[in-house]
Length: 250
Image (cartoon, rainbow, N blue to C red; front, top):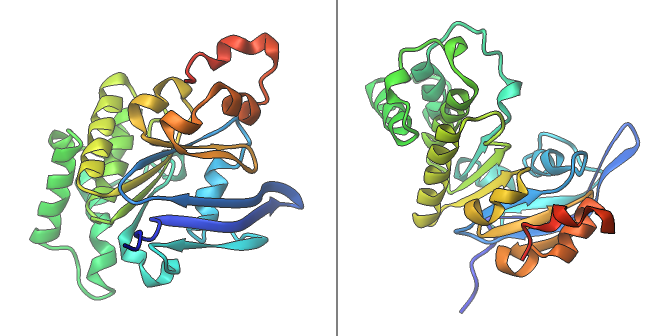
């Protein structure tokens, strides 16, 4: 029986900014139906990796595929949730309008969002637990609420692969748990989630697969197999004097 194609994969992917190497020959395959956390120290290239895969950054070498095909062939199967800092939160629009923007990809250039699209947006807001904020101006939201709006906008696209850059950045405990519930629900539906993550303490709770990255892939696979003290030590360049740093490993 043939195994399904990876939800996303890279081959020999290298990226540099102003001649400074950021990623070196990254080979990575994310199986379908998992929550994959991409973790590593600051400057490890985590966000650059997903941006290069999605064509938002031009790589020096290598290529990426999604479900065994180029991104252009399966673009509607891939949803991207960027960091919330990339948005002008002072722009005068409502939460419902922002989430409804997620339906634009299926509407084409001519059609405008109608009742059906707004109903889908409300359903996505309900899943993230903020339906009551639908008419709120986005500038009035807290950090956690903003992240849930971003997540709802991605959900309304109904992709098969969700790629999220720091979805837990700047969120409160309530929003954090709401986001985790959505991620695990997506996995239960057979969807695939890739998150850039920074908190080693929650990797085991949030993810079932993990990629340890520091400009190159140190290890990638099921959490129980690769989230080890040795791999964390290598990825984070931990010295013997920092043994407490490894308490989250198996």
